[in-house]
Image 1 (cartoon, each protein chain N blue to C red):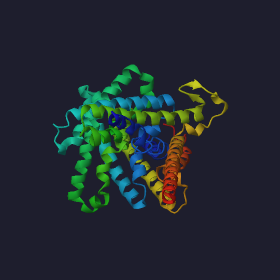
Image 2: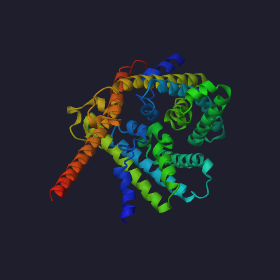
Image 3: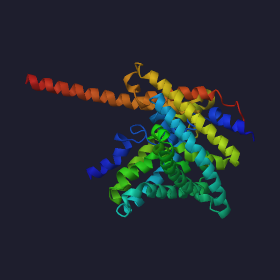
Image 4: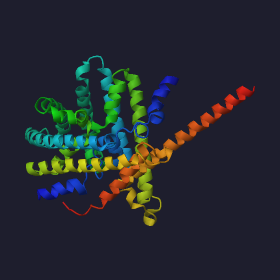
Length: 214
Length: 191
């Protein structure tokens, strides 16, 4: 069971697609003008990722390795078209704001990357777990980025007014805000990683010293 | 609509990389040196114009057959095979150019700027001439952003950056500042 858990958490934290692997940067930067938009994009990507991972894992033994990439792309494009039409039908407002970036899920390197690196070599169940972990990690990153930008830029969170127009950094909702917020968040995670490593080193050193004196 | 306005707006006001966030992966990935940035830009301009024209023609066909909803699947296949075809063609006809563009060509398939441009042309109901100029503008805009950014990053190599900001974080913040400069162009051309 422990191993299954690690498959799930791998994508969420230690190999987070946005902050660690820097995959799928275009939708990450473009659709996070608000937390709601980030959530919508994250869920659409998660749905496509799970379905494509399932199908690719099912047919992994049938596809000749030479033409596997075009086959994967067609499968992914098929699911993206389905999501596109479904969102057009049921979530029209969100579909309109996300606009171009829904069909562009096809070229999100995260999805093709998971198909190639994981689903094409592992069982269906494991591939679903992997897709869930990676997809939730991606969606979580989008929601975090969208929240920071929406709170600072518009004074609202998921549409709820926090302080309204009283204190707004308007640039956060504009394109430069996306680059800068993501850069600062990445720096923060780097810093956390660095300080954790230094603590570990200090501990190891102390342990070594203790061992030597003993 | 004035094609010159479309061209200029695609370069400056709606810059594909810095304002529309299309093609961020190559923008961050191939911008370490100016030489490679120039190579990548040329390859992208070339494929953008070709892909735009072909997808525009194909879309006309799809609409006639009532299969407009299939355009995402058809376009991505067209772009993937087009890139492959351009690679083979250049290898035969102009080995020099092929050598220069070499590794960048296959990377272009997954560049969302190409598919994005093809879809934008359809969304905006552009005619063939407008499509070509929009593609040229998008390509030059991509090149401008990429080459400017490569110039900045070459200088950044020598800068003493705090440790957490090294790598992706510092690159993104620099891109943010460059993007801020391009915000200054917004409102200059209204389409």
